[in-house]
Structure formats: C-alpha cells, structure tokens
Length: 483
Image 1: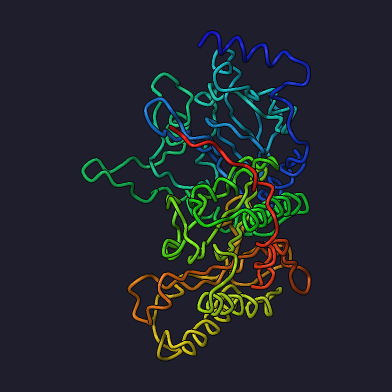
Image 2: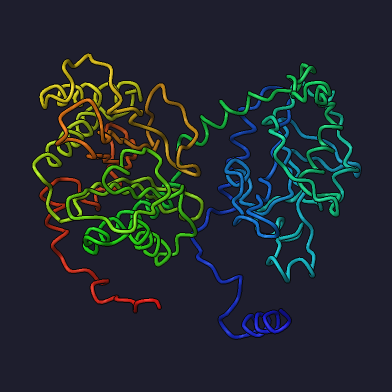
C-alpha cells in the first residue's frame, strides 16, 4: 500500500496530471446562487429551509458505493461531498459579530490524512471561493451554532428515513449533524414501544412544503441545465447507434451493456443515470430488468435497451428495441410499429398546456386499438397488462426528475415512452410470446411545441435496419479465450 501511495504522489506531481483537471462546463456558482434565491423567494414568510447532503452508502465490509450527492443539495450548492447541512433563510439573520446573512452551510473540513485516501476536499475556503457560499463553516462547529428555531413560523425540511449510519469516531458526520439538528429544532423522538417515527408535533416543523417548491423550480430547466441535458442525451443516442452497428447473435446482454457504458465513459459521462436495462427476448418483458446476464442472445430475439448517461449530474433516458438479427420478423415489426404509432400520437399533442395524463391517454388508446386489431385482446376496453406503465416523466438531476405533471410548460424536459410487453404463457397466440418493445425519447417543451432531443438514435423500422447493416468500430475487437 505504501508503494501505491508513493506512486499516486508521483503521478500527481507530473505536469498535466492533477485531480483539479476537469471539464469546464459544470454548473456555475452563479447558477446555484440564483437557484437559492429563487427558492428563497418561494419560501413562506418568516421561514427557514434545511437541506442535508446524502450519506455514504456501504456496499459491503469496508467498501462503499461511489458517492452521489442528493440532487436538491447539489442543485442549490454545487457541493458534491457528504457530511454537510445547508440553511436558507427567508429573511436576513444576524450573526454574533453583527453581520447579516440569509444562508449558511456547514461542510467537511480539510483533513490531510483522510484526503490521501479519498481525495481532495473543498473545505470551507474552497466552498467560499469556488461555490460562492460566503457563510461556510466546518461541520465540527455546527453543534455550537446557535439558532432559535422557535422564532420561525415554519422550518421546512425533508423528513428523515433513519437510514444514515453513525460513524462513532466522527462527531460531525452526517448522522451527528442530523441528531444535532433534531435537538435544536425540538424534533420529536421515536416512540420507544413501537419504534415508529410520529408526525412532528411542533406546528412550525414542515416536512412536506419543500416538495412543491422544488417541483416548480427543478421542473423548469435553465439554459445551463439544458446544455448538460443535451450533452447527456447526445452521448446516450451515440451509444444506441454504436450498439446497433456492433450487435451480433451470440453476444451477451452484459456485453451489450458494456458497449453502451464504454461510449458513455468515452465522452466523459461520469455515471449512468440509473441501472442499465438490457433485456433480450422474454427478459425485455421485465420492466426494470437489471440482471443483464443472459450469456448468449439469439438471432430470433429482439433486445430492449433502456440506458441513460449521466453527464455532470444530468441524466438522459432513452430506450430502443432492435432485432438481434438486424431485421424485424413480421410479428416483431407489427408490435414495434404499434408502439411507434402510440408514441407519435402523444407527440402530436406534446406542447405547453397538455398534461401527462392526456399524453398517456393518447398512447393507451392507440395501443389498445392495435392490440385488438391483432387479436391479442378481444376489445379495446379490455383490462390487460401488456402496457402496464405510464408514458411520461421529467428528466434532469434525477432520471424521474422533480416537476409538476398537471400541465406542460416551456423548458420542461420529459420522456414519452409507450411500450408493449407480451411475456411467455400470455393469454394470446403463442407467436406473440416473448415480444417486448419500448421506445423512449427525450423532449424539450418549447414555446409552441417540442424539440425531440434524442432524434439522433433512429426509431423507424427502416432506419434501424439500415444502421444495423453498417460496419462497427468494434468488429475487429476480439479478445482471446480465457483458460
């Protein structure tokens, strides 16, 4: 381990090798400052909003999952570390030294020994200089921070789910920050006999009010956000195109997943926006199939690929379903074109003023009529599970992002994703069994319609089949057999 640490130090000392080297298209400090101000304007009179960073999640033993910040916390601060708490006040507060402030954040202090293992921390000075939060203090001082919560008409925060681990060696870890906040705010303790968390009894503790405010804010994207979403979508479309060219019978689902995610990384996407779904044949009928473990897909199957790159926090969400052989069978084509028709019916009414419900009705009406015409259901009004999900959701910092669903508004970004899934042993002709099709695209709502952001990935049967005939850059990438 000492050799590895020495090697890391040597690499960091080389010209051009620095952990500070990173893309310059992240959200700016001014973006986050503006979001905090917009939230402040929406807060009720004489109130304070409290936000906690996400905890570190343990994978097993001494290995943790890669850290991912709480999207609300990142949206408001740009801070990507744990063990932090943010206060946004409706009105100016007075510090002990007489200075006025309306926001304050407590973050992890710099720690040379810890940073050797887990990377550079911003610390209080970094938060001030890089994120523009001037009232930044070490989380070790939060316990002594004096704030009288009883003076506020409302204290708004997201209620706790009690899933944060306690690091007994750290008195300022996230668990401790939450416990200290509870004590300061007079948060009700658990009911000892039942272990149930009751509703807060104090009238000024509001655990639901932030949802509506953040739905309004995060649902409408700014130009900076749209640029990042476009990048995430473009990367995700490119991966779909490359897989269409590279796929061959005999490949595994995991191999197909790997090609997608390699393309994501090639374009510097930091992560996937959600667990990748790559289901061949009947596996495509599992809506959130994440095993991706089928060792050899065959030429008679289709493969449903629902994947989205996450670029600088913003996720795409795109699904394509293609024939492994490169050509749809007659039955596959009929189901595929029915799903495509349903999507295009929703696209016809996709504009400001329409609702998610109306888009869903348009897709369901088309699918029910088509299933009836194909003899898969007896009547258009039959209850069935061949289309068991809704057709639309917001995307952004979450793949199912915050936002209102009653009416579409300019600068929302949504998906339209109808699907048909006919598992084996369904109550229809056997020739339809194992066919699963979902087509999902991402749309920016414009002033009088939409911009289909994901049009780079082909959707029509003839376009998919034509692209699948093209050579792939991976055709000659052949690994040796393992012995």
